[in-house]
Amino acid sequence: MTDQTNGFDPLRLDCQLCFPLYVCAKEIVRKYKPHLDGIDLTYTQYLAMMVLWERRTVNVRDLGRILTLDSGTLTPLLKKLEQKGYLVRARDKQDERCLDVSLTEKGEKLKDRAACIPGKVAPCLGLSPEEAKTLHSLLHRILAHLPETEEG
Amino acid sequence: MTDQTNGFDPLRLDCQLCFPLYVCAKEIVRKYKPHLDGIDLTYTQYLAMMVLWERRTVNVRDLGRILTLDSGTLTPLLKKLEQKGYLVRARDKQDERCLDVSLTEKGEKLKDRAACIPGKVAPCLGLSPEEAKTLHSLLHRILAHLPETEEG
DNA sequence: ACAAAAAAGATTGTATACAATATAATTGCA
DNA sequence: TGCAATTATATTGTATACAATCTTTTTTGT
Image 1: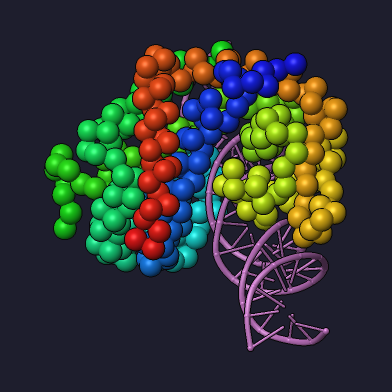
Image 2: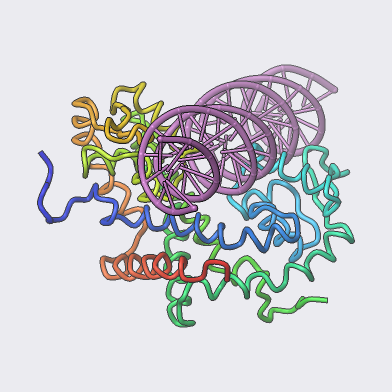
């Protein structure tokens, strides 16, 4: 029998960190959606484009490591972005296993239309700059620690 | 032309909160996976079971509001949990539109096997109790603020 | 050089998520 | 009372995610 009183029960949703993290991530994506609809990108496509806006060219392996996504997710997503004309996919001549993804001019231009989006979504969180910095640092701390607990 | 120097560029992945949130949520689910595999639950199924372990019975509407999931996600998920024998689904006699979801004995017993999981995953985050509390409160602050910016 | 191992993507299958729509039941109001 | 609007869930379609497997290419060990 588990705790039916108001005491601490680790299986209660509101005693956990994973659940608010899960909901926050989903709800923030929802906040992005109306803005991303305007430039015909999904949230994950937007993440991939952000990497390209920084680097112009990436191969799928590096992109997957940056975004923590595997080829099962990236292959169809990059094909869609190629269809939209925002990038081109081409095998690396030196190593035909690798697929290089490169920004097109159209993809480059899209950056100007995306530039205002983070500034529109950020206020929705309702955090002060210090709180945002604290959250940023806590999340990065978790991300740095997680790999250390493999097979744990 | 956007900032190519090391200056602040809001479109850089590492200048945003949404991206580490997105990755953290995914990676924590990944930490849960080996433990949940042992009790034949996916993460989302586990969330639904946690609500039932607290309340024994919920209707789909309330469950959806608690988990921020709609019927498109919940209907197939609850059918799977019913197939596994962890819950039963039955129309509310007073209001045949509503579907009540109730814990079975088998589902009740599953709680004992799940009880140890949060304690196994929590250390993977690598946060002190104070940091965890800070993160918890920041996330709940965001969740409380987000609805205030509807249509914003 | 050559077979085995490794690496990179692509494919397949399962499970979310959510928008949009459909259906059935209930409520509200003229 | 009767019908329009609302509510609750189900269904359909699209887009992730990821495990497992497959194919192709490259590297490695001998």
